[in-house]
Length: 161
Image (cartoon, rainbow, N blue to C red; front, side, top):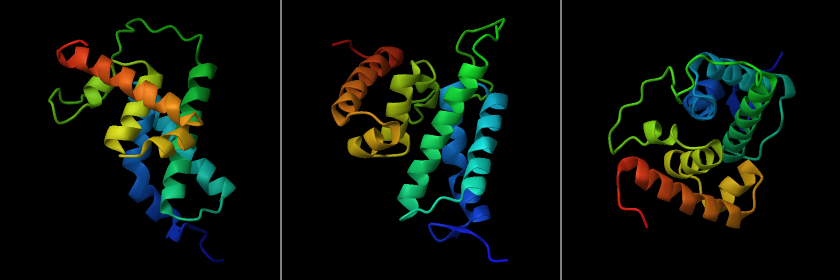
C-alpha cells in the first residue's frame, strides 16, 4: 500500500517538520502543557484521518494551524466548566523572559491578540495570510496587530501611546 503524501511529504515528515509550530499554537491558546499535547495529537490525527489534498507546503502549514486553533477552541468549550484553583495565566511551559523571545509576553494577552501576534512575529505570516488562517477580515487583523502591539508595549514596560 502506498504512503499518503501531504504536499509531497510523508506523514512522519509532516509531523517532524511542523510539530513545533502546532505545539506552539496549542500552548499559546491553552496555556497548559497537558491540554496542548491533547490538541496537538488531535490535529495530526485529523490530518491522517482526513488526508486532505494541499497545493503546497504553505497551504499544509496554514491548514495545520487552523485545525490546531479549532481543536483548542473545542477543548476550551468542552472544558469550560472546569474550575482551576490557581488561574493566574500560568503555563506549565517556562518561557524565558527576554527581549528576543516574546512567548512569555504573548501568554499575558487575550487569545485574539495572542493568535494574531504569534502568527505575525513567530510564524512570520503576512496580514492577508493571517486573515485567511483565522477567517478574519484583513483590516481586523491590522487593527488587532496594532492594539496587540500596544498591549505588548505595556507588558514590556515601554511608553504608552
